[in-house]
Length: 227
Image 1 (tube, one colour):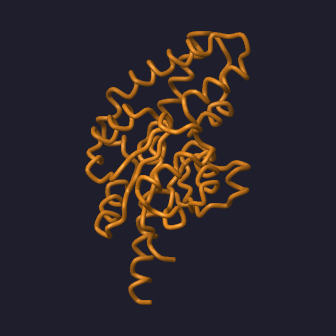
Image 2 (tube, one colour):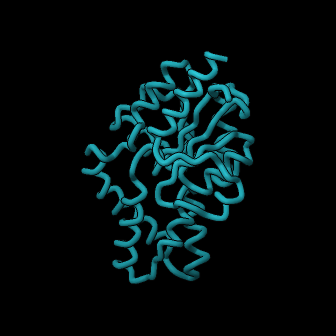
């Protein structure tokens, strides 16, 4: 295998350890409003857009104020993030080293996240990773969110890279499915969801950490030199 021309990062749960904050915020919201909330439902929210989350909530809780619940959850998550994003555990293990390696090889780096443009920019800025990123696309900027392929196709279009020459790094089943629908190879780096029917179906190459991804790319680089 050759090194890709473009590596596309998901953000929440992949670059930054924020999914646990979202889960905690959902639990706080469910206690406040008095509705049941299970981990299995939360796992369905990972990787999808805000609109799709509200749509799923409306299916689970018909005739309930789900938009109000969602707005309160986002407020709680913002409060939890306030101190966490400035701490040492915000960035996932190996993120900085992987970004530095990709930059040293002249590989384009993009972020494709279901989060808003404002949140993407804020997280990348606070984490000091923005200078490494060539472009980012939010789920707000495409017609359909993950698991549809739109966001990854948009990234490839903006980067002027054939999808077959790109690799997606994802922690969610929705993201893995979106990547394969876009014709982009996907690497799975599990976070909150370790296994699912979607992961079994697509069988992506799996890595425990971003540090392991960086090691894989480094070995690939050495192998291509010797060949």
